[in-house]
Image 1 (spheres, rainbow, N blue to C red):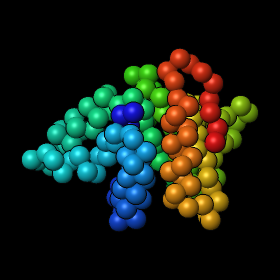
Image 2 (cartoon, one colour):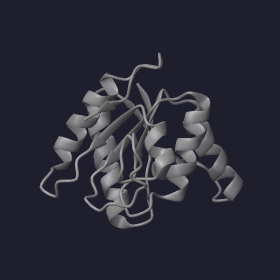
Image 3 (spheres, rainbow, N blue to C red):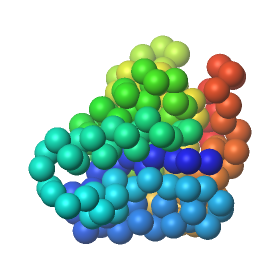
Image 4 (cartoon, rainbow, N blue to C red):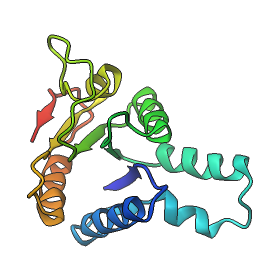
Length: 158
């Protein structure tokens, strides 16, 4: 499956986490578009060039994996989720943060994040236990991706 990996990439820790999870998905047989890697292939750091590379990456994906850790999810990741949703591309939310920061409305798929992001998800991987390993995150994410379909099937919570 062609996956667009959306997530914050501003700190060394975030970039390392992204690479580690993307590598696990690649090892499982997926093709992963990782924006922090893809922008290295362009010859300019002009805003329009970076924007276009990322938008094209979302458009060509069969699924978007979105890391929504933090008290408020990354704004770029939120945009990428909105674009994917508008294009009918399924979104798998990954949340490993034990802090709450969402809307917690009745019927909300994941109360610890923004309502709009929660309800746009096709699958949710919610592993807030600090003892959860990156290997467990990858394994659970691979299972969630295997269960995706574009036929409007119900949300998958893992």
